[in-house]
Length: 234
Ligand SMILES: *Cc1c(COP(=O)(O)O)cnc(C)c1O
Image 1 (cartoon, rainbow, N blue to C red):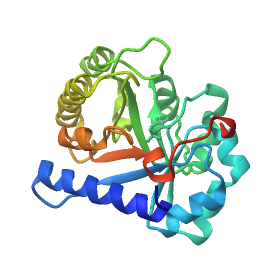
Image 2 (image 1 turned 180 degrees about the vertical axis):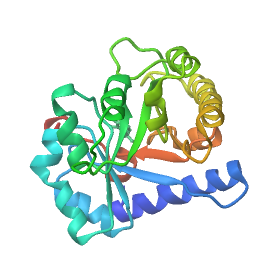
Image 3 (image 1 turned 180 degrees about the horizontal axis):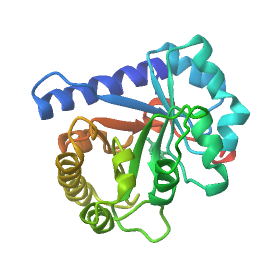
Image 4 (image 1 turned 135 degrees about the vertical axis):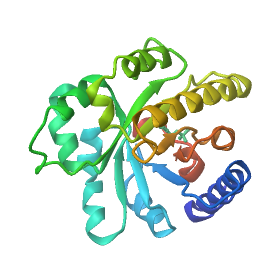
């Protein structure tokens, strides 16, 4: 299957090719390396192979592995992409650089915070439950449009959207979903200011090329870089 460096190079090549084809001009494509269940030495291997952004799903796991200490010796951004619980908001804001899975409650609390001196996180994406799955976090697209129509003040905290799609969705379904999220993203960018709303996180190992074709400029790749996650590591 190749080494982490080889797989990363392949992901990057495929992603950049799709991005150039989709965008047709230079721009910034973010490749977030999803490091849940991966031990620190493997994460370091990915960083040394060129990863500059990692994504973690669980606060406890990220603390236990001490991924944050990587920033002392490496140029790396640590993004939170997991479920948010209100009793962990403050810790997450203090240790992560970005929160991509933000919801209204989190953003409202953030918006009401005057003194942000203790916060490290500066970039926030609103999570979109694009397949309207009841068990998943994130707002549906109609819900986001309602908040935008009501001019919810906390929306001004967001720099973009992170879409999650149903695991079992076919490529055809995903294409339709990504297209819809992309339209919503452009609506928000024009409502809130296109210089603030710039990041569209869509696409994982299975479908990042498809997501990029439909406007993604941030992909989240775990297995595509590390190989399959073993369930015992979770
Ligand atoms: C685990 C995870 C990913 C990565 O999925 P892969 O299939 O391993 O690429 C991406 N986004 C989120 C939110 C995840 O939880």
